[in-house]
Length: 125
Image 1 (tube, one colour):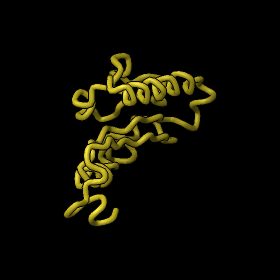
Image 2 (tube, rainbow, N blue to C red):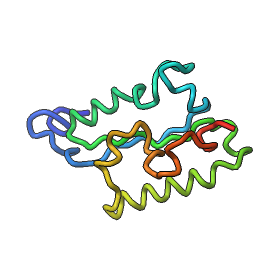
Image 3 (tube, rainbow, N blue to C red):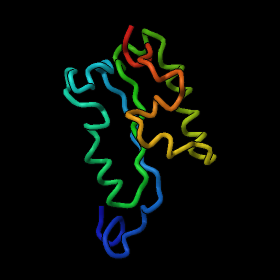
């Protein structure tokens, strides 16, 4: 980040842009919980990036995640995940994505109602 470009006086080049992370994690979704192996949610682990987005005037969106990525191919979870990713990009590009609804979510995967519960695509079987 450069002062006067991304932040600070006259640093508005990123204002109004949307920031999101697309993440693949080898571990299962349960590992990314307060009582899980990693002791933090994926969103908590990304808080420095969320603060960077805030400082630069960007709209931060929760991450879009593929958990259990080491076994995703064998478990045939890639096609559905890829389709959700395409749909997300299409909604963002068309302006039809409800940013206000998505902002408080832990993961963008929960944007789709069928993703509210832990699904097989999160690395659980």
